[in-house]
Image (cartoon, rainbow, N blue to C red; front, side):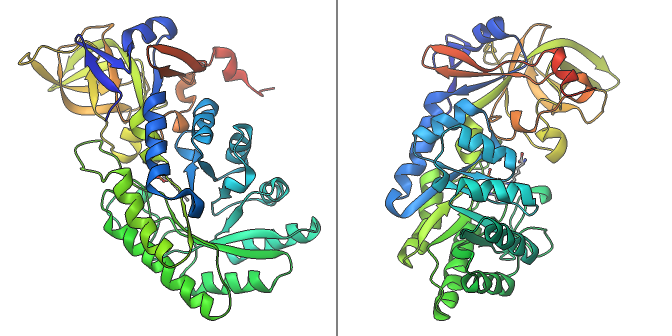
Amino acid sequence: MTPFTYQDHVLHCEGVPLAEIATAVGTPVYIYSQAALQQRAAAYATAVPSARSLVCYAVKANGNPTLLQILRAAGLGADVTSGGELFLALHAGIAPDKIIYSGVGKTRPEIETAVRAQIRALHVESEMELRTIESVAQALETEVAIGVRVNPDINVVTHPYISTGQHSHKFGVPLPVALRLLRLAADSPHLRPLGLATHIGSQITDVAPFGEAARFLVTAARQLAESGIRLQYLDVGGGLGIDYEQQNAPAIAEWATAVTEPILQAGYEVVLEPGRSIIGPVGALLTQVVYTKNQGEKHFTIVDAGMNDLIRPTLYSAYHPIQTVKQAAENGDLLTTNVVGPICETGDFLAKERPLPLLQPGDLLAVLQAGAYGFAMSSNYNGRVRPAEVLVDGDQFRLIRQRQGYEHLLDGCA
Ligand code: LLP
């Protein structure tokens, strides 16, 4: 259920008309629904039994501190992928034993920080990394819990940039190496092998490859158990897709049950790392029409949000639904238009050849399904300040990140 609905012909987030937010904080602005966020987090909590599972929200999808605090209150842990994300997760009050750290390139200082924070586990992606963690643990005279990220060589249908589970990708290690690294960890006085993890990709709307990944992990763990190493948990990663364009994405409960069942039945705890499926449908980017024009065969609607605010259409040819804030008359005229931003690149578009009602400067458009990898991937390109973020709760709303001012463009400069 989307929190963005028309009431009296005006698009609302929960009980707040979007125009009211535009008037109060300006555009472009990301708007999130607290109720929808809590409902999606609860869907995970209900689908997987908490005593034997941990849902680690992938902070990379959206690291806004207020949103992280809401997810913490809902009982979620965090999957972090950098020292910065670890900082954000700890800052939001997420308990260290609910934090796992994934990523192929953790630096020694990042590893040191994670070890000192006593997070649940670092997920190792190479032998060199394992040796670095061991040496940090030795220097700090401690024992560090690790998982190993295995690359199961499973092909999935998604954009090639976000498919991660094949041997040609940089992620994880092949199974024989994963087993060897876990045995090395078992033999080290400074390492404790706790889990086996994988993540096959993102925006996947078919449950089957996830089931395959879960069974792959179970088989590998059993193999390991035969050699006397008993793992505590298996981690299927994230990757559940959402409906950008009628993809018929499975519901959270369906996905979570399919991936957790084989693991729980085999007697292991489960870790999941969902990002997009929690936060994606909860957020929209509100933007305002600046100009319109006809050019050659094409019609352009120029808005005040650009690829620096939402890069997904440019980077992955991603489709995001766009709705006018003023509901168009049923059977009203539609014009096929290209919704573009102010940035000096032809790739700066939010939608191509999209049928929309006739628009005038000042009209507001909501780009939906933008809660995940929206603000998180924004930048200051073209000297543009990063947008504001607003949280809606019932008929109230509040700023949870100020729009940057031009002074931010000088941050840290000589
Ligand atoms: N765990 C790991 C190790 C990951 O690398 C990712 C995402 C996740 C969990 C969360 O996956 P999710 O549930 O959100 O699919 N910027 C791209 C998506 C990149 C995903 C990177 N890794 C996009 O906008 O589509």
